[in-house]
Image (cartoon, rainbow, N blue to C red; front, top):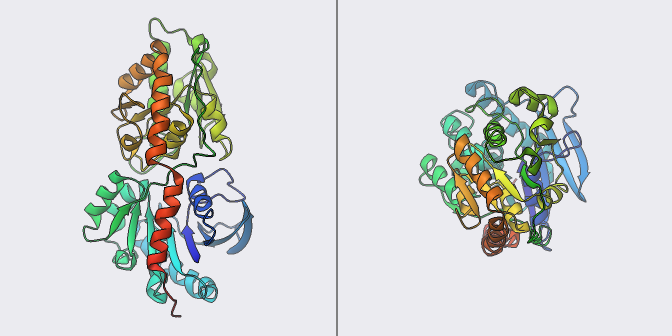
Length: 398
């Protein structure tokens, strides 16, 4: 069975560390012996990018198409570009390669699923739309009634949401659309259990992997809560009874470097026990989680963050904000702690709790592993999508 996998967020030769979540989805699906996945990476055109290029990534062939499409443009102009984009992509590039495709799978519904819906309309192929955080929470509410997007949901057979929270939000936008929850999950063989030592060392290590990225709604750098965490960390370091030599924050992710962290802090990161790493590769994530005691996911908005599942799988407690799908991963007081998003003091107090009660790290980490094994095994992701594909397998009519 051949699946056409359309996404605008995928690693590339110029950004090899980006968008690991969709790469993991494809790698999970590729474990099914009867599936052939053809990835189509939808990109915005730049002067140095070729319109079409085939590349190899992790043993799979990826087709990259670049056409003018720039999300920050006014939505009416953006809608016009999207109409041109989807028609050009299908009629000039994909149509001649569609004969063996059985199902369309789009990863992201703000742009990709609109393209997939057009192809579904033209071919009669069934269309599965994998729905994630920002596209459902912010983009679709703004764009769903705009020409280019208007009515595309009629050519989506099922919206597959990465969390219960996301499904609820989708239903507000498209009440009559068919939807179900399929957790992306985590590879439990790759992210195997590595228990914390029963005799913790002298330094407690906290890890953040969200980077300093922006969106249209939140303050600069803080959509993943990075600035909130830095403020909480400064409050922690200035607390009575906390020796900065006994704690360390490893700060990772997109757009992270010493200069920007120093600008936010007003001082050198090293002076307050912050180790700045930058963006971590898909293979480096496990290493940093395993070297840490507690993982912090302080996002202001989320779908279902991979790092929270991966941390729990390895056996690390998670301090997470109470947004999106995070409460589905973090059971407050059992596998970690939840706090109100952007609440600096509450986050500081939770970090301090683990420092003062290190035995809880191990207890919560073990509970976290059990929770992930029961609810977030990536094998279930593949099995659930396989069921959909088999039900929706259809012949193409060009």
